Image (cartoon, rainbow, N blue to C red; front, side, top):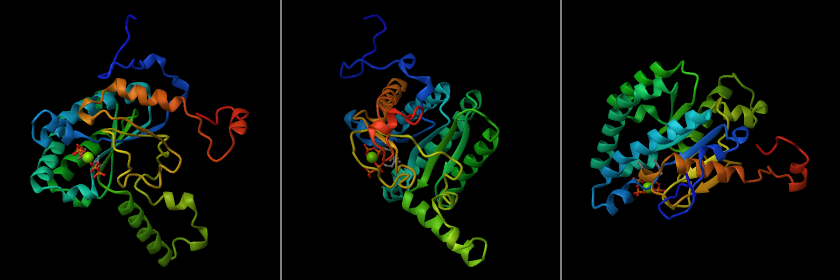
Length: 265
Ligand code: IPE
Ligand code: IPE
Ligand code: MG
């Protein structure tokens, strides 16, 4: 068939125009996993995989921006990743600085606003300074918001939120009786962001690894065996198409959903 695209396994892939533009998620979160295994398969050191992961990031960000998706949250470095060998951590931090500096122009060209969630204070000064410069530069962009989860873990985020909330109760700024889910969410790093409708994890691992635990309460989960450095916009479209075939019920019955237009988008 002319124009038919095949993935590595010979499976037909979804094209952008096959997606229903009216039913795209507002927020997609991705656990970018498999860089180390990708490099190892090619007989290279792990950092080679991280470097090649940047191409996948660029392609996915461009695709999300083009589609008009509002938020894309990428898990780039977890709290637990600090426990990796020092050489890998240092190389990842250096790669981060180099990438942020190099990609700022692409972000501007695509009207992308950068945002960071995580324990920014734990990042080396050079990383923090570079990040801050790009955050400032892109802050008025009105297109996609690209959220980097850096030195992030969900339990860290939740505990930080609880501490701040407890302090506000102690200082009389809020009454404990008034705490509800909405109030609690406003203390998270993701305050003001919609919850992700779709969470993608690459590399064939079926776990969440301390990512957005509160926010993914009702997210659709999509797992693919593709290793992150091989992930391209076609894989992203595939995940979005899969999402569009799901029925999101939020505890209701299928029959109720069928009679409530727009509830399943
Ligand atoms: C994901 O790839 C990137 C980071 C966690 C920074 P990995 O480095 O976890 O690659 P694998 O899972 O070991 O293959
Ligand atoms: C999760 O991947 C963190 C990132 C993608 C940044 P990991 O590779 O660190 O997760 P585990 O250790 O396999 O659960
Ligand atoms: Mg991994």
